[in-house]
Length: 119
Image 1 (tube, helix red, strand yellow):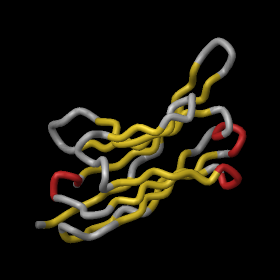
Image 2 (tube, rainbow, N blue to C red; image 1 turned 135 degrees about the vertical axis):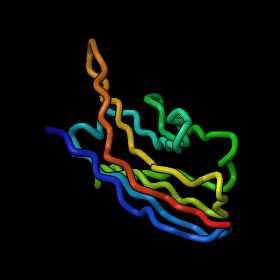
Image 3 (cartoon, rainbow, N blue to C red; image 1 turned 180 degrees about the horizontal axis):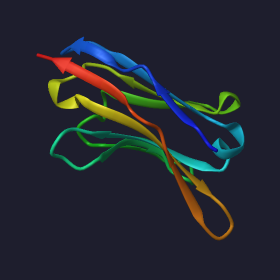
């Protein structure tokens, strides 16, 4: 069973920073596109940042310039450095891996980590 483990959430004030971590088994990581999503009550889950299969880095417009996604391939990990946090950034952040095989793709999700931002 593939486990996706997020950590690093917490409660901060607006303007402060948090760093999220996500680890997955290396054999899955090495064949996966990796993303961070977030979800708030009443809203659909939205993609915040990620590494596409071709290596392209993408960001949600509202976080570009404040958030930075990075990766540590030997560790099978991705990170999300979140600076200048705003109350609108609050939510449950999920790590998503899309493992790419020859004729199918398999998504994996973590359980999420809560981010609270007070004004």
